[in-house]
Image 1 (cartoon, rainbow, N blue to C red):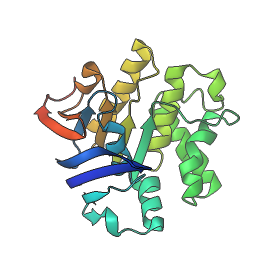
Image 2: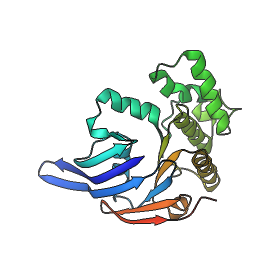
Image 3: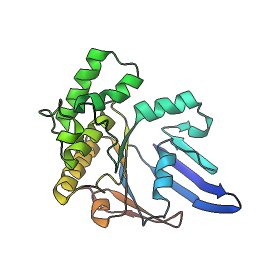
Image 4: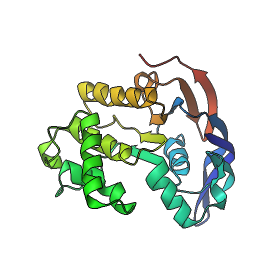
Length: 228
């Protein structure tokens, strides 16, 4: 599903140049659960932005489901982000003034889905993550773990083939962390490709493979077994 070849990303500020990624090569097969693990500043988030078509590499090739990302128009990239990839971030990025289901329906609004269908699909996604009783609650009425579940439901609502999760448990307590990782396990078992960005060994251990990134390079690619 994902083929990366010679991916480099360079940032320049004045006379200072910083190479965040220094030649990343990797393949993630359809339906795999892969964790990208490394310390702060290792290039994890830069790599996630490229995988999510949120940023372009300076050099190298990214092929997503057989399509060369570099050849896509802005409209095509937007469609990939909205329909083919579901994003879950450390910060929940929920609209405080809107109910849970209104937050979840947003990708469907951008996709032009009719209003009645949007609500039905949003409620179904919230039910899937265990929040069927809280669809009318606003974010401020939900715990941190529940807010992250809303974010997972929003990522699911377009039925994407791939979920990109960037430090999704970073702001959660241990119980909520276990709940969110359990949801990712369920999504993997349903056939979705999961790419999880983390700096925590215990979180990375839930994946099938660990890609260890350090100083902009993947220094290890290790199978770790099927999640429990």
